[in-house]
Image (cartoon, rainbow, N blue to C red; front, side, top):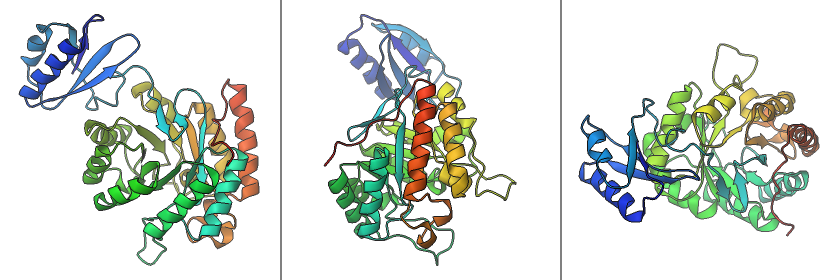
Length: 344
């Protein structure tokens, strides 16, 4: 349920409501909007709670929420969330492009790619220091050395960086180096990891699981939000279906559905969504047309020699062409690509 406060209620009345909820073993999550202030109630509620809260000073009404996800839903927060990653804002209109290699391989590869994607218009740099692999014999990342290389790319280009964290034990380490944490598709329901990234105050990109429903996806976001971290961005990266031609089936419909159900920004990853480099641009354009707040694109200087996911990675030239087409489409629907870091 959510508690809607009167327009003239003050901090004292709000504090009393939150204190009362804590007395009952519940959590109160405050959301201040342009038109109203609400307190989301998280925990096991009981029938008498609604009447009890409505009697408190400053409370306008108490509204039950039928959906199992509360903090990520629009009932709790009608207005869109805007998530700051460095100087870049995800949500709010501008289209944010995140780009870079699947995996960190060498310093030269990473820095060259960071400079290329920045020049083409990307505003956040991606790269995997820790890589989950289907096979234990595949490349699994450089670990902390990869994080140091990513930090070097940020220093040379000014682009904020995002990388995936795989285990709860690594959250502190990864957060120390990066500007945004990524929870990958395989870990979408790793609830211990979700709790741990929720305890940080770093922005989190939460990818949809390979077979996850939209409700399961939003409930995973709920784990992060319920720990106090409100900086969550969702990422549609394709789901597993009976189709075998593509790596995954890109669910474009998930983008407007999320925008209807949730205030959280949603971006699209057509690289993983298709698994084929020549499908990345068409699906990126479709995602923008569907209303995505951003794109995540894999780019590599020599995809033929990439240690991970070369088949779905764009060359520098192909990425530049994608950005030109995305910019033209965004302009036609009254949007623009978010500006990146200032020149270094």
